[in-house]
Image (cartoon, rainbow, N blue to C red):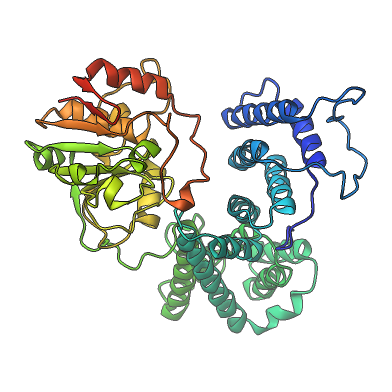
Length: 499
């Protein structure tokens, strides 16, 4: 089991592991592993391009473990390699397989070996440890990430609160089982496999009173050994299933054992205990998956459909403000604030002289929560996958920070409303393009201007915590720029007018 301590991994060892893993992914049929293979190729190619070419020096033998380098000769993790290496770690984690999860942990430890204050490194390590079921170590890594960041754009605080609440509820559940069956403790130190097998055998023979201490003792042993969370949850779920079966609960999947009266309807106390245990189990699962929600109505937010959004913007002048350095270097603030509606995106940054003060509509991808705590009239959250979008809303939306919130009809405009599939628009549309396409499609605004949209030619202008995030390569800015220019009525250095 991985621990909270970072294992020192030098860059050469990580390069060797990445190169070796890359050879395993040739001709894979798994979409996630193909994405990892591409990330590995990019990382290895970037490394090859940045290694100084010196005569008489052979390249790094990536397919075998290199000899231990001295501290002075160890390879340094430069800025050029940082983002490609983190991309490998993230893609490896997304695969969900044991080998790839181990690779993701090695990547995180490689980053943190040389950059002990890397927020991205700590967040990656925390996510990997959580996936491995090493929850206490994951909590420590998430805490370290929060210590190093000012803007919790990824909703880590909510995730951390969920893990802590889940652990508390799990401890309450286990304590309840232990108190109800004191004799279980004598089996906690034995072999978990043997105790569980004996318990199942006794249950099958109808000896529930003898089986129960063995089964609960197995769970207590797992807790003492700090077993992975998923293993503990599997044990609890199986035990509760047996308990439901023993009680003869409808829907448990089995009838009571022959020759015994069920404890169900005739034993209200047993059913009450079963209900309490099941509730604790469900709540700890829910807390770990979604985090706690203090206000399920999110401050009484009003959901907007496509038609209702159209009615709210009809007849109003609108400007869309890019997160570009061109805006940051400007003095357009007063002009921007003179529009009826000001639209800003993701991790926008406010400098009144340059950017203006107002934000009427905040548009954000669901994957991070930058500026979600800033009060706006309308917030539109975009996301391609419905389940992930709902999960992000539940965990990141700040009660009272918005009056109106776009519903699922506004979740992914280019794909969902426009029905533009990958055959027509192959790349993932940006938040800016999704919003611009939506406003162009609705066509109810007498004036529609883009301010500072140079498609990142001048660089990014974002919140400080977001400035280290790379300008992602999953979008195809050239196609979006061509689409805009085809519809432009006038173009200046800072403004593109579409209406």
